[in-house]
Amino acid sequence: MEKLNLAGRWVGPGEEPYIIAEIGSNHNGDIQLAKRLIDAAKSCGADAVKFQSWSKSSLYSKAEYRRKPHLADQIERYQLTQEQHCELTVYCQEEGITFLSSCFSPEEVDMLDSLGVPGFKIASMDVNYLSLLEYIASKGKPVILSTGMATLGEIERALSVLRNGGAGPIALFHCISIYPPPSYEIINLRNITTLQQAFDVPVGFSDHTLGVAIPLTAIALGACIIEKHFTLNKNMEGWDHAISADPSELEIIVREGRNISAALGSTARTVSEAEIEKRQALRRRIVIKRDMRKGERLLLEDLDFKRPGTGIRPDEIAYVVGRSLARDVMAEEELEWSDLV
Image (tube, rainbow, N blue to C red; front, side, top):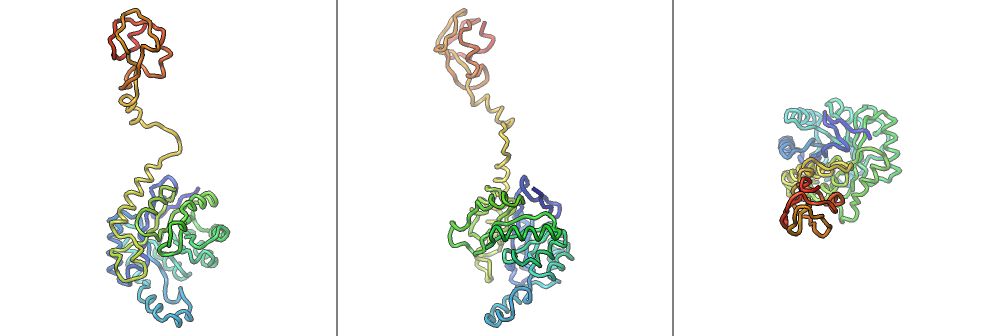
């Protein structure tokens, strides 16, 4: 399985989970709020912040805007200009956090590529936008593809288009494209394993649930990337603030996610040096049940097994029974090899 390299950080199985604070449109069109969100994500320990690169012309048809005039106003308010993209990219570089963004048109792909993004994120809505996938692939960079609403067949086709088009390493996001999901039953986190086994690529989880339990569970199931919407205040006006993590929640996801990943460890059965040392305190050794004289032969009923495990082990009893004592011993005394003849 090929890992991704995002700005020098390896992403994939065996690596710490890569945590993306999805700012999206939660900047509400305010560049200073965007910078405060970047600062907060960095303080929480996120690896990257992610924005959304769309414009009034790259998302909806004019007919839809005529049906929903308020939508056009919101899109214009929340879209980022090319100059703002550049400003935020530079700001992320200065703050030491990776800038990522979802792209929704070839023009936005070109813009992000010119800004030096380390990879491209493709939203679930564009799994079947094959010409866009081809164009993204032509840049030769790593790609993260969300799979909300998609069948396995659609995912397979999208991967084929990306690979044939020259994309770099690809990761998939398991995703439920409902904000938030109406029930736990439709989240199906075991799909993380399904996607890993079906496509042999790193798999993450793009989370739209409330709270921190589900993304942490995703990490426990093998998700190597977590994307979580991020806000400074869930009560702010805007599209996604209510379903976003605030700084206290993002900090938990980062810290406990990495602890979970470390605790998962290896499938190889090993005993740590610390546990080997602990054997002496927690395991048992052979002791004598009754007072016995030098020369007496030891029978099974003369022996007991008690802590600490610093002497003759219980599984060595076959080499003890039937042997004679080299000295007098008292009841409850610990038996040593030197006590046997």
